[in-house]
Image 1 (cartoon, helix red, strand yellow):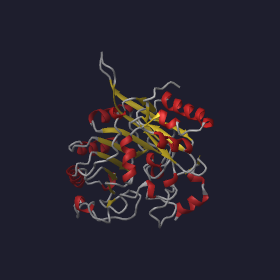
Image 2 (image 1 turned 60 degrees about the horizontal axis):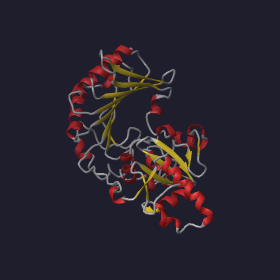
Image 3 (image 1 turned 120 degrees about the vertical axis):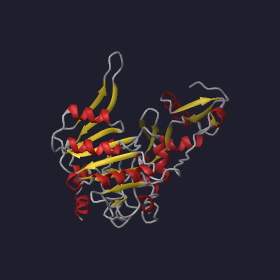
Image 4 (image 1 turned 30 degrees about the vertical axis):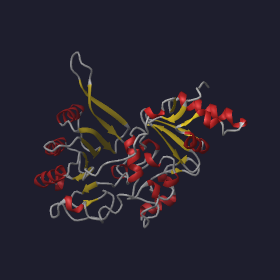
Amino acid sequence: MKYSKNDVFFVSSSCKLVKGAKRSIIIDYSRGDVQIIPNEYYDLVQDINRKKITEIIAHIDEDSKNSFFSFIEYMLVHEFGFLTEEIEKFPEVSTAYDDDHVILKDAILEVDETVFNEEDFSSLIFQINELHCNDLQIRISSKTNFSFIDKVLSIIDQANMLYVELYLKNEGEITNDQWHYLLKTYAPLSHVHVYNAKTEKAVDYYIERETYFPIEIGKVSHHTLDFEKGCCGTISFDHLNFSDMGTHHFHQKHNGCLFKKLTIDTTGNIKNCPKMTKTYGNFKEKRIEDVIQEKSYQSLWNVKKDDIAICRDCEFRYNCSDCRAFTQQTDDEYSKPLRCGYNPYTNVWEDWSINPLKLLVTEH
């Protein structure tokens, strides 16, 4: 490996290293890439980051130098790290996460056409919009109906939402043309999840214009999972986020699922999560802004992955959104998520749903 006497090794600003019980990972958030490394190399990077190569080598015995240079070469080839003689030109990235100005990050609204009241729903959207909430998830538990979905989205469209998701059952029939109409008409609508589907598939929808490249306007994903089971709490490798460093920093400071989150069920009850039984009143009787600032409502907002049993030893802990609704020990707010099948002590992913002990907890 070629290097000058003044070369300093430093980890790329787009990369994060996380140590687990048995192994560590390198995450390149600019590429959405994750690589597994031994814990010994994690410790090595902590010791050598932002130091001169010559100074590092002076403290390494001869038998270890080949391994050291092989690892540095690995870091350089994958662009996880670089060499420079001007380290001052590459300051470390701040891990600060400034969200004090955000009152409400995201909201989940459960909707049922059989008890839907247009005036109440308009009032609800107005309250949420006043809190500058930009992300909205709509869960429709009644039979899928194009006209009803159109009505719900038309009300939401009067607010300033940036991102809207739809969750619904595979009951009723909506054509491709109708999905295209909804995704084109309502710009915030970005992703639709259809549960209880016969097969797994995802369909991307585009606007096509002559002489222009097609513009993607949204996606409809079909899932074979049951609507009630698939919407909440399940953690698998496919659910992990390796593309957003901001989320990594966020999970180091707050709970990835509950922080500044709101749920309104079909009768108007205010909850922190749709799967939690505790309610904090009804939006028709209490202002949402007042409720979400109560200490009791915020009690789980800052339960971080580093605080949670087993999770604190997991190398994927900052890529996981967590779940406090379903935990292995139901009376312990620091218990591992029930619906996570990963064991950081064996590094094996298993299907949580076939574990008889976890099924017993679910039944109770």
